[in-house]
Amino acid sequence: MRAPTGAGRCYCLREHILIWHPPPSRGLVPRDRVKYNRERPTRRRRRPSPAAMTSSIPTTSRRTTIAAVLFMLVTGACGSLPGFAPPTDTPLPPTPSATPEPLAAEVNGERITLDEFEREVARFAAGQTSLGIDLAPSPDDRKAVLRAMIEERVVVQAALSEGLTVEEAAIARGVDQARAARGGDPAFSEWLAQSGYIVEEFTLALKRQMLSRALTDRIVEGVPPRGEQVHAAHILMSSQALADEVRLSIASGADFAQAARTYSQDLSTRAGGGDLGWVPRGWLAVPEIEAAAFALAPGEVSPVIAAADGFHIVRTIERESDRPLSAPALEAARRKALRDWIDEKVAGAQVQVLVALP
Image 1 (cartoon, rainbow, N blue to C red):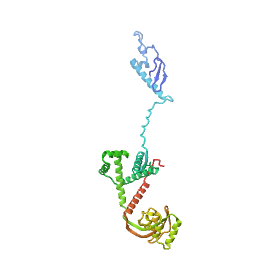
Image 2 (cartoon, rainbow, N blue to C red):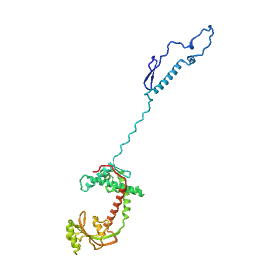
Image 3 (cartoon, rainbow, N blue to C red):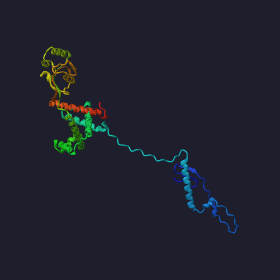
């Protein structure tokens, strides 16, 4: 805005304040423009006035200069008035960051997104349907799926830390084999879509699987194929009173195998007189039976043992400290070794479950 003319005031551009200035006198002739009669007596020259000292400046320039000086004085005064501070640059608000993707879990800093988890649950449900189990995944199923995903991350991280790698050519061959197994590209693409995969995700999943297999193979190969074993037999009964009676009859000379055929409720061993065969450590499903079998000397019979499934009487027939494991026993020993290793790794990992699971 401009300052109103003819009023002797100026407009403060910075704070919108009108400051009064007295109007300049009009009609006065500057002293330096007064003409004197040369015939008059010479007068003593006086010291020129401030106005005369500036008479050499053109009128227009003088006005411009005065206006500039006044503007600087006024703007300076506005800045020093109480309550009026010079304007400052207002900082721009920070650029909003992208909303973080929801997570299901973190494993040693590696994220498992909620979307990945839900798609894995959907694959589990599809697998159940293909087996004729047409039920929605239960809360326990969801927990098992997330546990499997966490375990896979732990195993892959361990494999990478040990320097294991998978060649890209091997991964490409795996993708080609999966494609061929489903009848070529159209059927393979349809299967990927139904399984919630794109090719890149399937390739990454295959790479993780191959890294896991490389490490787990190394672990199970470390299980010795030989070890201490006992040849044992047992009798299972649901009543402690009956078990005590049978135990007393065996102690009195009754045949153990015949008592098993008569009284045992374990249908898998009853016909064979309760014979469990050669048993390595970690093979039996009931730990109380295994502990008793390895604690007895050959020919000894245990007292009645209470367990979750009933009451047992155990007999150790013979023992060997270094006997080859049967194929099923070796496979069981390998599974147990792998399970123990994974459980130990998961227990030592930094795991955060970030999804609500009932």
